[in-house]
Amino acid sequence: YYISHMFKERMNISFPDFINGLRIEHACTLLERSSDITEAAFSSGFSSIRTFNRSFIKNMGMAPREFRKMEGRT
Image (cartoon, rainbow, N blue to C red):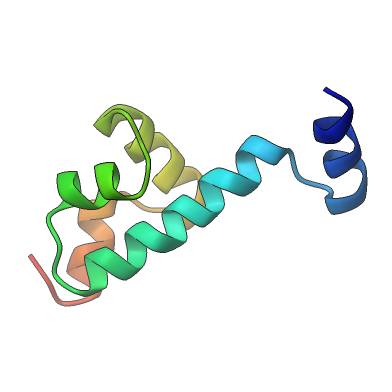
């Protein structure tokens, strides 16, 4: 609790949100390399596609499928 509280106070972002941001960055890298969305989600540390999609939209402002289309991959 203490570490999470201090992290939030100093970084202005919660620790779980920070970790999920790192996971989404990794997933974006995988998706840019033409990885499958499901594979990118699980390889990035998410335990469900639903959680991955929610976090992806929160961080990137679009769904993973939209991101892939934007990157020219389908």
